[in-house]
Length: 301
Image (cartoon, rainbow, N blue to C red; front, side):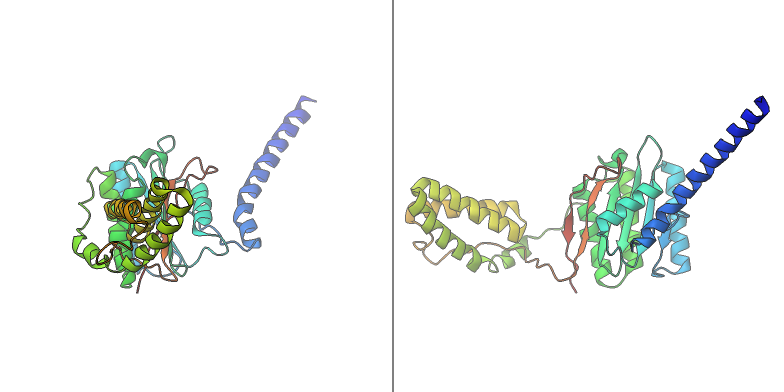
């Protein structure tokens, strides 16, 4: 009787193990049957499903990432796919992160750099252990100032290699250089949105002052103009100046009609094309809790 019980326990264990294997293998198959892009196996730190990189480029990147992982412990994985459709890049990257689990266990110091080439989308996923080093602001600068300009020129290897290098240097403790000066560009952009802000101030200032009174109308007009200036220029200082001027002239004269010579705002001059690169830097684990903050980076031709 004991022999039969031992055999039964052994058979149950084998059945459970087989069921677990089948369940794990069913994930990619289920994704494929649902029309979703399958997740490639995590066989290396550089996975290129588009043949964008040459064998030498891929091997060189792999060696650099391996050497960094052996020296630092943190893990950076790069994945290039043609498209994530029908999923968004955010949804697909979370599935990849859940399957790959880059970084050390209980340290959570993995980074996933995903590029969907045909979709013209890219995304960075950051583990909790690196959020203090690679936050949204620094990731934004890496993609806008380093990766996107090279992608715009068709230099995908240069963009990926330089972006990965900057991520590794940040993890090593090297800060980003100061952002480029844009004073000359801002002064040139000032004329671009002046008509828009002038119309907003005239219409909003007059209506709100009549509806709410002098002071409340001026306050609300200043907020509206300041918000519009910030959205168009991306410069907080310019938005503050626009808000103050809108408030002052609405309070004094019921709009900008009394301002000699008119009023000009400022404009960063960034118009999103049809196919910008969208990306976001977000937390990688816990994977079922999406703490991403999507941002966008223009990819103009």
